[in-house]
Image (cartoon, rainbow, N blue to C red):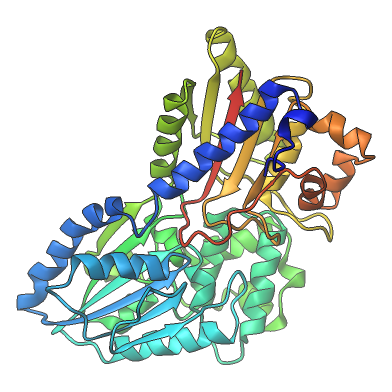
Length: 443
């Protein structure tokens, strides 16, 4: 964050103002996409009408909310469905303001599945096994649900084994699509398998998306949607990233022998009722609007999703400079979303957002530019921050303090570097998750 009361004495006035503006835009965006806000209720109302219309043939209603936005999303759903109350349900993740009668609450484990993930899976599986053709089941899904609900597909594969697989995938820099392709094929709760358990109940899936907009089956690893990925693709991810040897023996031998049952496919499942009610595009559009309201010529860039962090930094800074050249007399803003690839290279503390801005620091040194990147869930990697920011004075300040940005980056310790400069962004958990948001400003 900008040091309290100290910004103008540490930076040139222009750069200090840019850092403050970037943080203000982020704060405004987080308020605009608040799941408990009026905007979400207006989006959910037509979905609730669709669910309500099915009550004549399936009067019983079960609601299951899972993920980082579980509590706020459940609150929002209850506010638009007062005339169609749920008989029972489960909330896994952040708690609602008040847990309805007949509901269970599990805090959830994240980012690595733990004992509460098994507890949540068993509660949900129990509800779905009891469902019949007279039952409607509403799934409210948001990012983080993959870890919060988990049960291995085989008895001899432990939760710890799956945690090792997840750690290996994250550490090697696999994309979210690759990670979830593997997760789906090793889990009893992912890749459409919960829909199989619930049949013949009527399912409705409502998503706050933390994945690319054209891949809803990736949200929460697609527990209720048919899975387009295959066993061969699952095994190819492991082989492509060279992590087979670090996997537990119980998983490694199944990958080697291709001894994995296929996930449910579109042709074998009933058409899915699925609704994406919030995603990264909403955050970008809000950021664009708030930047323009502050006098910036703003543009949106989406091309760097899942790019290596250094390449993404170079491309977006280049595009910011180009935008400034086109509008030399106006301040400009470039808004980007998605997730950059930042493989873990050392024992440090940080995440992809802080790694991204650290990669930008040398590219903008000496210029009236600020780059901010943060996770909309308020969490970046293994740090306590949501992200961080750098500006044209960051490199000079770091050198004055004896900090070598390249050395911090090499050991994946971006948080320590930015924290020493007072340039982390700390929001706390937001109760939301629509991927990362990057705000690049130039005077």
